[in-house]
Image (tube, rainbow, N blue to C red; front, side, top):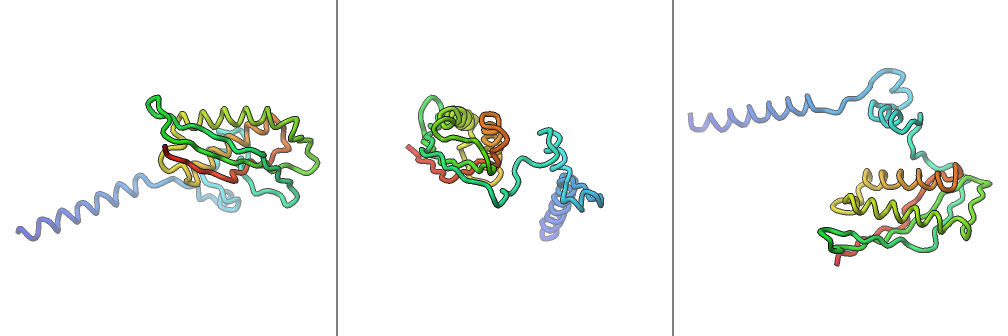
Length: 169
């Protein structure tokens, strides 16, 4: 009986864990139309929340022009009123052909907007923990793309993170 109880508890635990995993699994839409377009409910919810039919990030067309912002952004990470680390980030813009972006004219305004967004991202803990995960960087890039489109216009296809470093102090 003493040897049977641990085995019984193991089987009950495995069954309960499997049942909870099955109940909490992500819901997907397997309708033929969604499967043909590669959509899931998560993509549909994202499209509804952004008001667009397509996701914010799409692969760049072959004829885009990449303009690197000349200086890096330095963002302090503050915890309990103390600077605990500094994040250095380099950015570049993917622009559509025929754009009217002028680095000397538009960079200061764009830089101010990007810097504010990066400070906000740091203040909500965006540069803490696993900040280089694909999901975290994609969320940051989406925010930067939306801001760049507001400032420069629809010629902005993407904002590329070309360098990213966090230096602990």
